[in-house]
Image (cartoon, rainbow, N blue to C red):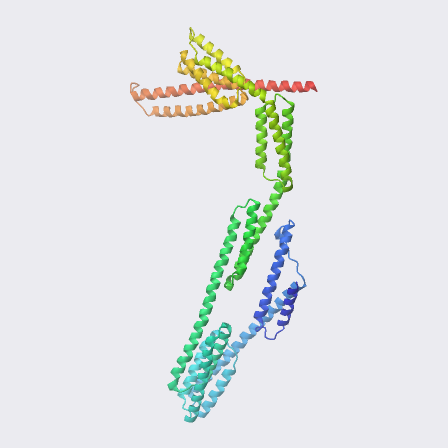
Length: 594
């Protein structure tokens, strides 16, 4: 705040200057410094405003007395500078018009004056007035100086003056021009380019103002002067070229930093760690920006606005992200508390009911664990407490399961032995007296197999495959045809599904599979029918006979599958009715207890 007040005082003093153009750069420097302080204060207050949960677009920077004073001085400076520039332009235009008149007078003098003394007096008057005229527009300086120099040279060499006066003036002018050349050469050591430019312009005006010298010496000293002048000009050009190259390189560096920020903006940042890394990167890029020098004036404000805007956008996204994370974590905390409650209820349920459906209960507890894992992290201070409670509840569930399932595992082991005995009987099966007797005995063994309870889950798939293979072998021994065997095997599969856990769901899955096979069979039947349409001629043609046979097989296959679908529909409807009856019985039992 103290520095802002100091800057306002400095500006107030300088702005009172009678020559505002002389102090223009100093005032503008103070304005830039003040604006930099103001922008920094704005950024800090905006950060506080946004951290309190407000949106950046609603932020308005409060201004103090210094800010209002500065705005007033900016207006004064702008107005005063505008007036000064207009006055300067008007003065330069006036001076230009005066010099045009002087050139006309000089030209008329050179062309028309014949009286030497009068001509010389007039020329000296013109030269004196020329030297006293102030600055003219910069774009006319060179051409006007050139024309004045040519007319001056033409005057001295055209007008015949007195020998004594001419020799004296030529010698004096020669010495003055040599002095100008000596001072011009001293500028070769000058490193301050601004100072060099001012002194060069002054010496050029002085050179042109000095009259002619000895004709035989003119080419020599002219070459010496302009050679040195061009050498200095090259030095200035090299200096500004180097500055332009440096500024161009700085512009490329700053644009590269902008691209880095934009790359950060385009990244899909989803974690706290990623956002923190992005924030650190932005701060590093800001420090790097400060170390880079000036860029071309035409691009300075543009690249700075672009860089600052990109940085502000990233920090705004960061605030939005952490706001959303906070809200999500609140929701996750609630979700995890609900999961703990569900897990506790599940543990209480298995403790109370010894006949609990353990596979389903285990599936439920694992589902809760999966939900917990996928839920994400809760608020930091709650996460560890919630996890400890949830893990303890899950451990309790599996302890109860281990205790209550030991007897079930023993029973499943015994059932496995019983089913192995049935499979062994089927493997060693011998046909009966008639096929009917054979099928009856196979059915009895199948019923016996299906009547046995559950077996260890890991052995189930292997056991079922062995059973299906043994049944198929028994049918083969009984002399059952391939088509009949497939139907019998399907019926056996339906019976297995009916006797298993979740029989209704298993039957519905089987129906889906059969429906898919029916659709494939229909497509195949349609394709064969289309192929048959391409043939013409007698049925004795082998190709036609084969096409018809293939089509008949496809029709038979489709009809067989549709028969299976009807069988499954009957079984599913029966299973649904049984389940509904069971549910009604449970409801009636509960109502009776009330």
